Amino acid sequence: MRGFYGKALTAAAALVLSTSLVKAADVEVLHWWTSGGEAAALNVLKDNLAGAGTGWLDMPVAGGGGEAAMTTLRARVTAGNPPTAVQMLGFDIQDWAKEGALADLTATATAEGWDKVVPTALQAFSTYDGKWVAAPVNVHSTNWIWINKAALDAAGGKAPETWEELVAMLDAMKANGITPLAHGGQAWQDATVFDAVVLSLGADFYKAAMIDLDPAALGGETMVEAFNRMATLRSYVDDNFSGRDWNLASAMVINGEAGMQMMGDWAKGEFLKAGKVPGTDFVCIRFPGTQGMVTFNSDQFAMFNQTDPAMQEAQVAMAKAIMDPVFQSAFNVVKGSVPARTDVPDTDFDDCGKKGMKDLAEANTNGMLFGSMAHGHAAPAAVKNALYDVVTAHFNGEYDAATAATELAAAVEAAK
Ligand code: GAL
Image 1 (cartoon, protein in one colour):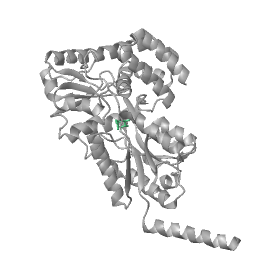
Image 2 (cartoon, rainbow, N blue to C red; image 1 turned 90 degrees about the vertical axis):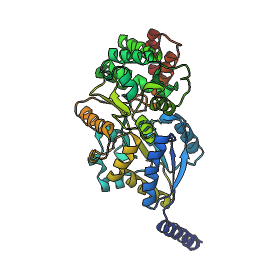
Image 3 (cartoon, protein in one colour; image 1 turned 60 degrees about the vertical axis):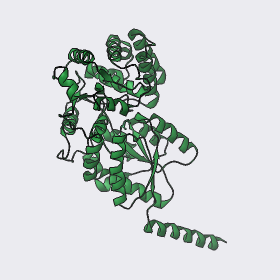
Image 4 (cartoon, rainbow, N blue to C red; image 1 turned 120 degrees about the vertical axis):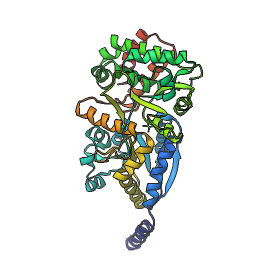
């Protein structure tokens, strides 16, 4: 009996092996890159993988910021059917690694020297317990403003450098008959603006409130001021903002219906997709008061444990393809982000991309680089979601600024 089963197993193993030698399995990729600019960037990745002989099974879950994608992921894993590879942010990677769900990419990472080229701030999320569990494809940052160039010129032509100048420009745009601020009323978008507003009140304040989760900073006077600024910004948004997708808000700036959008640099992907040129059709600036500082988020691909060797092989192929320096340049030029490797030249990037790369390097050197709260790099999902609730309730007029700060400190404390 023993001999029979032994033979049968050997035959089965040989079959699996030969199949994997003939053709690596397709990778099923769960992601939330469904806007025009995002899809264009995704195609660069798909093509790169196809070139390496790996097929792509698409599992898109629409919804900026990835909340819906993470809900779908949880359901798939609970059902015992995890996707091969998943787009993931910051603390979510750490949470899944803690659950033991992620494949170990250390052998590939070591062979390819990832630790020498991936910035330490990113490695903190790509590795868990000394092992590589994700491959970073980019670095985005959230403290940007995207301004329609013609609307800027009509409003005086000088990009705002302080909060006061920003408000003056929003007023000028209003007087010119356009919607000053294009915004989509979804919790993650409100929180994205909040990242920049909190940072504009000082790097120390951002760190104390968003990274250290210090109750005194979360509930104090400076936070009240942050909420006051949010209410001011709210007054420049059009009546139809509720529920609007972020890329539709970008479109309002692209077509001149609105003056500006406060959004991470994935917004640039929409401008580029529409054929717009930085400096000519649109202008990118750091949110006033945050010059020299960067709140970042990095999209990474985590691989979920698979037993099929062909699938494991496909995962390694995908991880290698993601980390390829030539690909990192090509992909990030389209996506609006900057490479997750420090050895990629900025040659092919437009002026906003070059500025993004320079800002990131400088902020890193100067201790001015912070994880984005809105995009999962400042605190785990429970805290992030608690903050979303308060920021959105305030943005929609449910709380005044003082109440919002008190509620924020309490909600974060409860979620910690
Ligand atoms: C972010 C993600 C970006 C972009 C954005 C909007 O969380 O890092 O790559 O896709 O959401 O969907």
